[in-house]
Image (tube, rainbow, N blue to C red; front, top):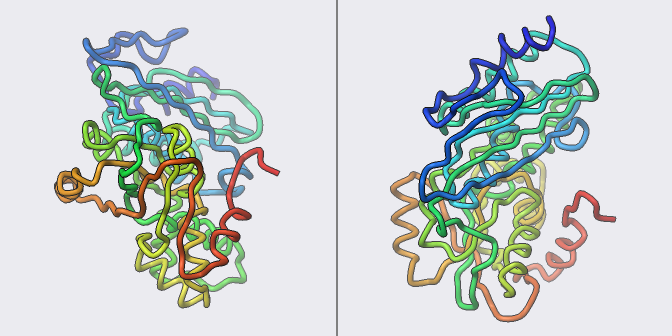
Length: 331
């Protein structure tokens, strides 16, 4: 099966059908119509074998995650996703793998009205890159900058689940380990199939003063947002929302509360939204969350100065947190 046949069979039917696509897959580039009064939002993320996922990871999960991580970036800007480009580097063509990969990507694309309008196929070590475009009303995009001293800091969902799921997935790959329990499987699902908070991001326009998606860890990404805003912040570890599956796993594994908090603060790959807002908007935020069926939790406050601190009943947590912070190019 040559490249043209691969595109015709697997990728031409993929994604939503949109009236604003003048020319999609099949030419040298796509032609797209931007709605009047809107700004274009662009994001790209790559998933690399051995860095972002284990060898032999389920292709359905990879298809879902490849789009989900980009949807999370678009959500953090308060934008509506629209069009994507897919660059897929494959060591070999396996039709079953491609079918499952597309089966993971397609439902998410259709759910969020994302059209696949082009991309690239090549042979090499497995790597998946999605470039995603969205639109937002001009002047209304959420940004990392904008938080002010006195604002509250919030996070959606339950950070730490994905990190715990990643640990359990690695253990599950060992055939000598017994089958995981129900709560362990729930955490693995949170890692393999993250839920981008697209509707929440759009709803935060006009409510949030600053926003960022949580990919490298809540502590790291909150600090990036506050640095961009020229502010400092404080997170109260006791306020962090820890899920029931994570607490159940911790009891099974004998993990301490501090170990759970480290996962929530530094584990990464949650693809939740961390945002700031004036305290006067608390009721409006909770009403939005209730309408969308989302969970948001106030976890701290913005202060004057620089940096971010974490208060905890365990005085060792801040020190442990600094050593656990993730950076792709950190030493």
